[in-house]
Amino acid sequence: MFDYLIFLGIALIGFIYWLWSVYKDYNSYKITRTSKYLIGPVLGLIFLITIIGINWKNESDLNKPTLVRVFYDGDFNGTGIDFKTDGTYILDNSAIGLSDYTYGNYKISGQKITLDKNEIDNVIKTDLLEIKDIKEDGIDYIAGKYLLQIDPNGNEIKKATKFRVVVDNRTE
Image 1 (cartoon, rainbow, N blue to C red):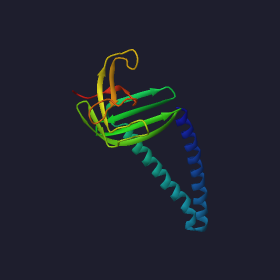
Image 2: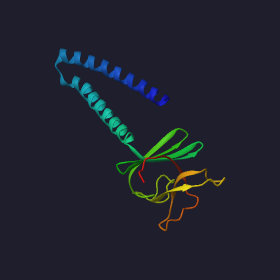
Image 3: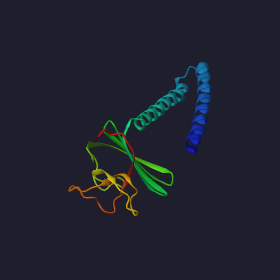
Image 4: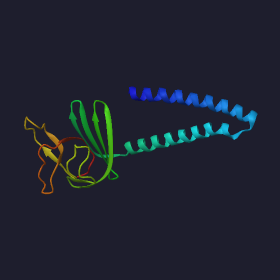
């Protein structure tokens, strides 16, 4: 939440400064009729439109409907994968509040998911994943659905990150 407040504060200061600059440059342009005074306002407008466009695209990617969402909680770090209904995914690898996003495509067939990349951020070690319903074993798992990394033979890769399924909107 504080990130948004800081971003909003910086954006507000920048926007107010840009408006002040446009006002001064426009007054100078009216007096001298020199087009160099229009460069700042035009460049500012181009940057403003670009920033709004990039932000709109990022928000629309994040707000697509979710098919399956998984998460691994590693105390100070964590990794979540949001598989969207349009065949894209967003992997959020975070450490101490800083996130690194990776975007890609996937295909799903039953319980198996095939990614477009073999390795991602040293967390995903294969392009093959499988959703399994696992009973509690008292050590590694509590009862529920998990996304496991598997080899081409369908065996779970040992010491690979196991993700807990937190949202599953598939119709089976």
